[in-house]
Image (cartoon, rainbow, N blue to C red; front, side):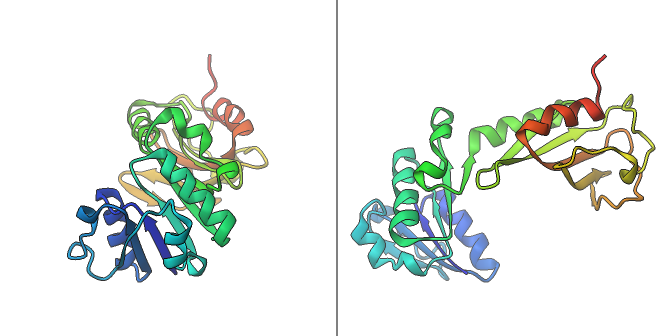
Length: 220
């Protein structure tokens, strides 16, 4: 897979290192000469250019990329890069970094963003996930399918403690994807029983979130 990353700062380089280690072809683009640090990601390609300029993206041959990641520290630039990648080069998948929570609503289909990653939202979600028992915590939003990755820690008074996964009347469009228990990841097999303290990960439409929370942790 060929991946172009616009923004070669600490975030872009970290993503690039991970992708290179996983065997992908990576191109890092940045307009600041000080950011061109080929020694830090030696197996990646580097391009000194402004990714907001159409000519720069043509030079990068963006049409050959499977994914474009807009990871600069400027939300306006990330939106422009995503939009150009999607509309001018028909890149199959774009990922946009959200730096300021107030701009999160812009990172969607209208600006060519398939997946938005908001560091402030992720950090706050992880804090909530660490302290919340019985409350549904939204961890991530999948823009293309209008679904969310959510977590719920089973409270001790849940009506489904001790019952098997197959015995729970899950909402139709809700998918249980993993059970985190005793620092291990367990598959949600139909015969696996639910225990107090289990962290359950779901993919669910937003409209089903309240029903899911009420099912597993009804409020008295």
